[in-house]
Length: 315
Length: 315
Image 1 (cartoon, rainbow over the protein chains, first blue to last red):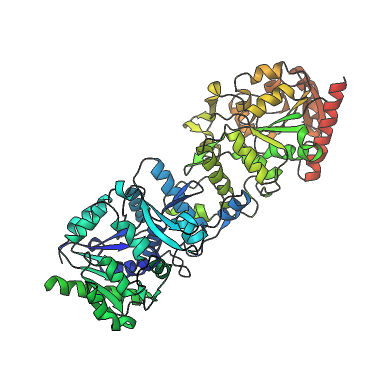
Image 2: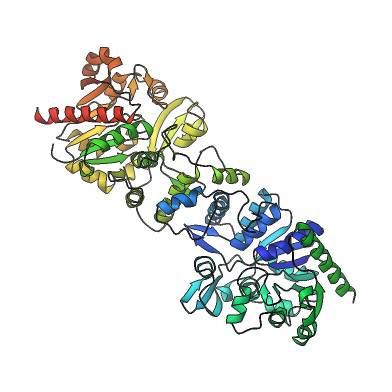
């Protein structure tokens, strides 16, 4: 394979595979591009949940119980912010807040989100390239039966309970793909869609101008891991969202979303019976054990994926 | 006495008397104006050390071991900020940082420091009026044998070790006294100088345009408590600073600083033998137990001061 693997990822689910890939690929052979449509401002601080989940995971700092936040974190700041009457539904730990404080300071000094991410990753010893999808603001807005909600408002405050009508990515049409993302689109040897929510994690990345065109014309292998196994999302609201958007809640629904910009969908062994349906949706298919619980699971799946990619390069 | 007591205060020393006054006066009869020359920006957040020490003290949240910061605070944010390579010599606790986060957010929204202080105090249940000396930036700059240092740089990072040559208050000539301070200067029945550092706590307040003139023409009683007992400051670098500025390190040195804008200097019983010298410096003098360890000490001294003020009103 010529050029690095470009991995597109959201938060916790995507971070599992991203970690596996980072363990089996040399740093220069992997570029992870994160969704920033979930970004928001809390208490005046710029929070990038997916970037941080990926960064903490790659740094070995992620809270294993939740997948997000920093292991062993405390909640002193939030405790006091509550006394000040501030919203506290977004559970920011103290060490996590240090990231947002430092990011916000650097952004205010005029650095880009890409630069800040590189700086923070460097300080935490993350050697793999991790970049935001864009340095421009893109905000995932969820239109529901309870009105239009910013993504975190829907996801955390309302626990995904409102019924979905539509999802849009405010600012996406005027946003540019980040320099590292653009570069990777031009130089990558393969694209991997991590098992992230197809609507609100991969969706915003695809909504950036030029990205769909680049992917449609991409010459190397493009593979995806279905975040839906059976009729359930492995985590998060992907199943409920697909259902409410009128799409099929299965690996086939995922295949329909990615047809045209992905060569092979990797489905879990539990979905082996859907192989023909995935092919009918316009995509080749491979069956693997996709459920990642341990680090060994993550590395094994990453290795199998890379073998698949090598096979596709050779064919 | 007609009108409230206007108490001018710096941090920990001043806060002791401010607490005593707040316990013996109804809220409407006391306005505490705090030095903001020590304010600085850490990690992009606006920190007002003296305002916060006063606020936490009045709210019953101050750390009794230090006098500043929040009791029982943790240091998770600072711990992580260190990993990001940020300066960590200014020991900000997590709950304390919540104050700076909330203050910074509100200031960025366009509120004044006075408004923010009132808001935060309200949330913490502080009924006494506490106001910054100014809503405009004033920065105490310390000229030393190691160059010019911002106050916190001198005070915390360099532990007051550099030898002092001069102190100036950058921005003071263009700053306005805050609305509450101006109002109190016009309506107060008495002025109390809390036992705060005369150079860097009371000094910046006096450096604001018009304040000296107002105090010189003030009609009610003006009393001060010497922060120097014997030849030592009760806390902080006041003694070292006065010495290096070539002034006498004693209650007499304090009296010389306040002559013309204070009627009576209250000195500690240990300084009873300096009464004639204080009078020679141009000020009347009273002897009291000024060392405040317990809340009872603070209330007793506040009561004795108010009795003194009443006597002066009647005379």
